[in-house]
Amino acid sequence: MDRIGVLFVCLGNICRSPLAEGIFRDKVKQAGLEDKFKIDSCGTSAFHIGEQPDPRSRANARDNGIYLDHQARQFVSADFSDFDYILPMDASNHRNVMKLEPENPTGKVILMRTFDSEGTGEDVPDPYYGGERGFQNVFDILDRSTEELLHTIRAERGI
Ligand code: 4NP
Image (cartoon, rainbow, N blue to C red; front, top):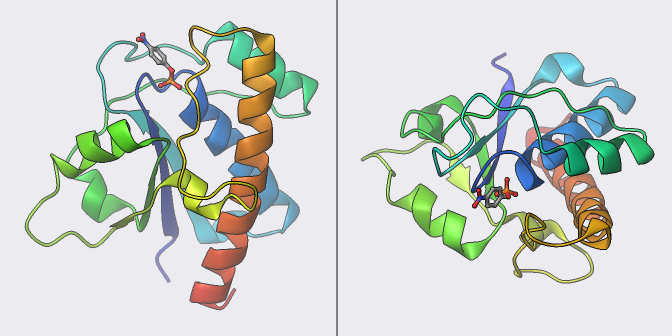
């Protein structure tokens, strides 16, 4: 069976989406499902292509037991067929993604916080210009949201 493709999307691909990727990878690993998934993240902008995650994001993740290793890349139209679940972090990046939607997309696009038990449908706030507490707030949001995302995918795919 093909792996289930899960793609997290933000603006720069250096703060929120690599963190979501790292947390989700950890949950998938703990569930013993690594061979069932293809997991990645990207940004809708070209600002930080090739860069590792922001040092503040890396430090916050490390404090929470998650190690980030990712090279930023930009979202492309082909991601609609390469991934089954495309998860933009906010409404603005949702719009950016939809601008590149091809004729017959196979992947479905769902706002990340649709899966947040404590605040559905809102944006994952951009911590880039904020302080450390912003990063922990983002971590907590993504921890809750990726937990529910994994439950949903397991139920949908029967794994
Ligand atoms: P991210 O955060 O989208 O969560 O990676 C940002 C990173 C960089 C910029 C904005 C947001 N920027 O304007 O360079």
